[in-house]
Length: 76
Image (cartoon, rainbow, N blue to C red; front, side, top):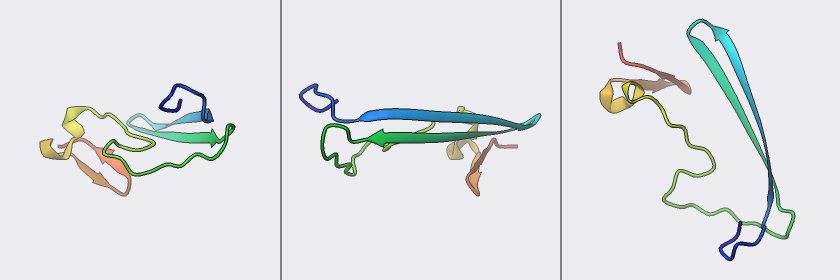
């Protein structure tokens, strides 16, 4: 929705989850955005952008977790 509450685009989401092993998963997220009502411009904001992921606090870097090669892993 636009600032005035009018429709500005259409969204379709395709989410596929893969169960690789007992302790490994992949989530593939594919957003499809269609500017159905005219031009749409995305700009940088202080928010997280198009996709953000909430994770268990034990996986946060401040708690010893690490992000490597796009994989999140818990400390220990």
